[in-house]
Length: 382
Image (cartoon, rainbow, N blue to C red; front, top):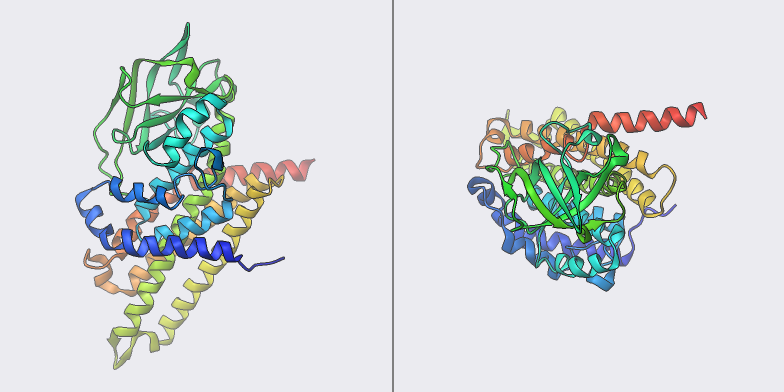
């Protein structure tokens, strides 16, 4: 067991931290206030190799692992949670195409995704199927060399702005084996978007419904074989869950730092807040819980990198634990600021709004418990 990061990992972590400090943190409040999607800043991450973190290098990817990805998103989210989360989604889409698409499709799209000439969106959830993702209704009917798509996807990050949509559609019967993955390019006739959703957080990225109405796409835009799409989607989510957990961890770490600064400056009852034992205990608990979350996250990432048999279980466990812990720590940091924490003059209320959704997306934390329990009982009953 070696808990030390390698020199390369430390360099990657520092690079992401500097980018967050220089490019994300100074503008995060403004982007949140104005609901601005900072495409120009997002595209700068491609110059650092962060648009294809675990995509193969022959199409411009960095060829790194899930541990490195966790380090990157932990660092980026300390600058802006919402923007870091979109970059995670783009990476998931790029990886799915790189991993499962034909060589022609890989070469057509991946170089443009890793350079961020194209931005991407992941389309699984529908208005009528969230946690029960395998019940999706969006259908793709074969018509010669094309599919004709009809249906809608909900809560799609980047919708209307991004250029390529990785869409899970029903090409066969009911259930997961009837689902395939296809790619729909922006501008395709029949593709349209709803209004930007009025969200609690994640204001620096648009979220909208994606509609398909007799939307014709080439069969060549299918990723892998018919019927394999749900499997691809779930494999993509293993890594996506770790990235979102890392975003909660990084945000919570920034919140703890903010609380340490504030409690060192603020005075009450003739002494600094951090001289009050009750406050010291709270800070100690916050730091301890974050370290536990960090070790758990890195272990799950290591398991996914090494393709261990229990990797999916650990990804679900880590996602549940780290996002719950992250929210709780941010909430405690806000509490330590008293009334000031509730004001937009301080970053805590934005951090709280942004991390809350991480307990819902990439599989709600209740579904993470289902995954863990199912695997646990399967092992017990074997």
